[in-house]
Length: 149
Image (cartoon, rainbow, N blue to C red; front, side, top):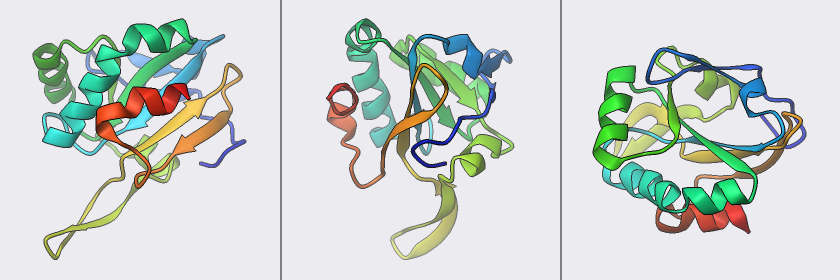
């Protein structure tokens, strides 16, 4: 997925088993943020930064949706533990991470594995990708501020 591309209508299934569609956010900008794993330090910091700045993001016309390949039950615990005010898509089939090109080979301590690259897509009111914040650019402690500028 690149700047100028139209995002898919069906984004996925959220933590409650409900379909999340692009049309649910008509008239708003959508912050679709992909993250590696629930309840890990960096992902928790990022989610909490978005939570703490959620009102500012909404006032600026944004809605926030997180995506990881974790199961819905994991998302429910993550939301409850951190009081997250936004929905999380359980992309267990890896449909959305592959569509957006954020699934690939990663390495940690010399070990290679497949995983999600932390990436944020800003989708405009018409469903078109307007901006992409790439993995090397994302600062988890100030991610909301990066989105707002």
